[in-house]
Length: 381
Image (cartoon, rainbow, N blue to C red):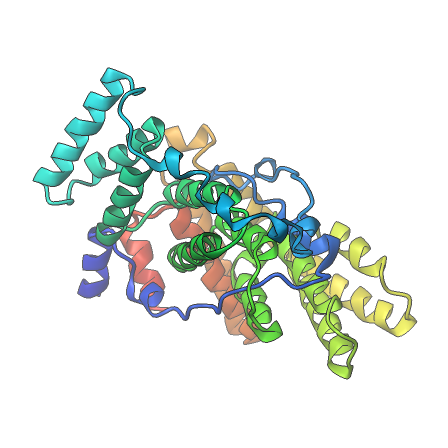
């Protein structure tokens, strides 16, 4: 416990996150279809709330799967070189002074001044000093755990840089680096829906030579935590189902599509009705429709049982006024929810409920990262 607490106080990841397995690199699967592209396209925000407003529609990513951009000359890879130079000529003097003072504070503290270092990242991004910002982010990551907002801004900047590269060696290098960042981000913040949505978008748009099984494992990772998100988990299930549906016809294909569809419909999701309609729209077989109808009934019962808890968690989220008068309200809401899940787990002995408890702890810590007791309680699970 003292080791876990020490890690928490130094803002480093607890043991259960350090030992989390890393997922294989994911690749674009030809024909993954509109569900995969649409679900992935939802990742266009850098906000940290749990609202559906976070999800904005962007252009379909299908074009990225046919490799149409690869015909451009490799010489274009260096088009953005001029933008990467730290040129002070156009900087506001006040902003430049702030940057220099913050860099001095960070250097004096040997990187241990969290406040100064975090503010430096903001000012360097504002000043568009890309190389200095990258160096500071790497140094910050060595000392502290990045917040959701910090990870999202880093990922957004690198993906913007990737868009400027048409093809060739440089693009592959940037893709590999972004892949590494996503792995670290999802390992640090496994319950962050915005981070996972961006990862899903990136995985559909990028190109690599990963196997079908590698990609399947990517979806399985998302299903463990974020696909259980009450308000936005359906996007991941639709993408997973579209992936399995796009595979070459085989005896295993049908069973895999049915398994993913059944698991999705049994998950307590706010938009379960919408998910059911999208799945049944592609199914004609009567037996299969009956199978999904039973799964949907199970999902509805689970959803109804959790709705009040989910509403309370949302009501006490940090963006709402409630937090100002009662800063512990959200923590209590999560604790009540966790107690309910644990009670069900003891009664039913269901492995899926174990994952639901883990998902709730991760969500609670995402909202309440400085609650030592919550970290210790989670470490005991």
